[in-house]
Image (cartoon, rainbow, N blue to C red; front, side):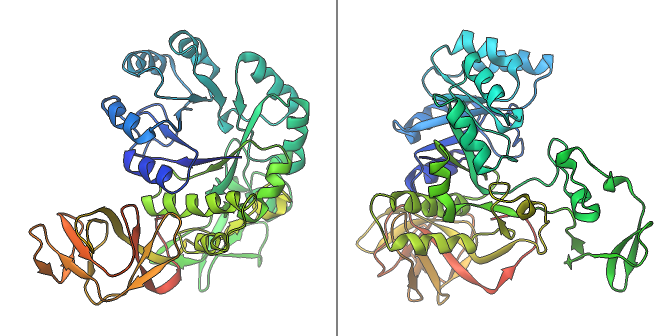
Length: 412
């Protein structure tokens, strides 16, 4: 199976390939559903070619287009090099004539936003010219296998890891959670429109028609999460995905950091490679998924809808702070580094490599742009690090958080 990693910008794209992705997906400014990701501007294509280096790269054009959006897309595509993208990921069929006219040899992949969830729809999209479909996320493994058996010449790409949305395309879980009536089965109780009272001691929600039935609110730093779904993690079930006929495993996370992209990609790369050559490091890399920032994990809809229809009980959890990366070797044991978060000498840090076990160091030396020793490296500027650890360009640097566990805020 292909391993497909997210790339919100060119830096993340480089790390996705370096840490084991077979392919990556990106968005163009203005035409991708992850509009707050950096995405890629038209001036960046030369850099994309260098980073891609013959590997596969897919472009997400998966918004739904108004007329003025299609006009803007026509102008943007004037500057897109032929051959830079191996496929376009599409939701809106209205842009097919434009893409076929301008890029007749580029594959078309159907976005999960198109909500393809049955064999007849899959066959229809194949006949329209799509070589791959990303089915709706609510399919089980058995349903995915049924589509593959019915349309075997159509590639299937599924999400294997990352954030899940609580309410997409009418798939709200509040009704199922509160009244045992599933909106996903056409039986929505419209729980979002009910009347609620906020109790403050303890902090709870009480629905008007259910006096005494309290829904606790977990609060951190004066903010609370009551509509937060759990995160998908299928690393322990890759053989079942393979047996269902899945062709590509997709990692969600174009909005997330280089650290997330690298660590998650490495884990799934090792797990896939272990099918043909068992590697004890695969278990260590898989365990690292508990250390990146994430909500509680779930297997989504693949096995049992109960697994996804329970919201997360806790906020983001993470065990480490991402400090930066080793960019290049400049001496026998000296390296130029990029710094994302400040750190100081004497602090215990760890190095992670694309295929290496974790290395710890407390005796490292930091140097400034003129190679003078300093006590601390901060986000801006040029910095160097000396270490006796066997590291190389492409390694990540992190430090253990003092109170690892639940942490509010965006995923790192």
